[in-house]
Length: 328
Image (cartoon, rainbow, N blue to C red; front, side):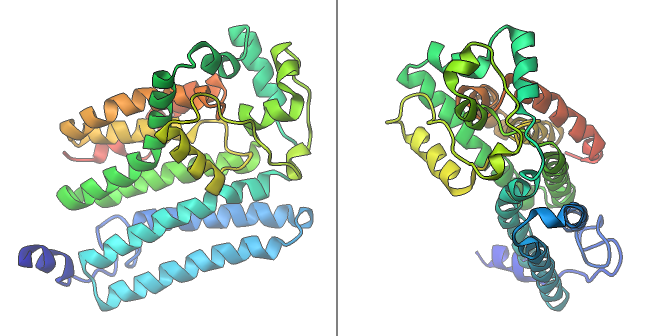
């Protein structure tokens, strides 16, 4: 116990350049810097669409709050540069993800919805709507719970992996965090400018019967004032079904369908885990990952093309964000 306390509370060498772990700048870490970049980019989008909001200053205030919180933790680190404070900085970044996500809806709802384009392409590619028929074809309790288990595991993929790397491979934690948060913000930047809501929202807006008949009308700015979603399919008595519903009720919005960040981030985490030779953890994630990729379509969250592109995007992000520089 004393050894653990000493490891996390003992001051580290202060760093002026390169950040506390070598990748950042002037004491800031790389994932904090990439968050600054996203905050600035999204602020520019807000300024260009300023007249479309009732309270645009609230959106800018969110970015000032993030900056203030990051600066406060940076000052704490300068006064007490230890692993515990670095961990607190990562926790703060993770907490902010829950705020940045609904923020994409607040911004992109001021652009016309593009679901009709994606649903039409899906129909031409598969001859049907996979999201509409998947849960109907496999509606048993077992399949339903496996799908919702896979979907819910997403909330643990990147958080638990980051915690494990922090504890057992601290030398890699900044790059891993940079890759994970960088991937999130690249996806979020796409969502700001590409408003696709996904089947759970678009199908309800148009009508499931119309969708089944192959009708995909342009709903324009409908989701600026509507956020109702289809009831989730499958066995409503399942534990994981209810956990996913709780998560959806807390933060889900008609946004962020293409590409699937669930699939992209999870794919990225799988590649990171393999690169770091964390084989046991990779085996633990393998089955949930398989069901997660399918579940995004099963529960109406995404079109099949969202998941397919998300898989390819996750691989691309691994290389683009420097995955090969990790050392296992």
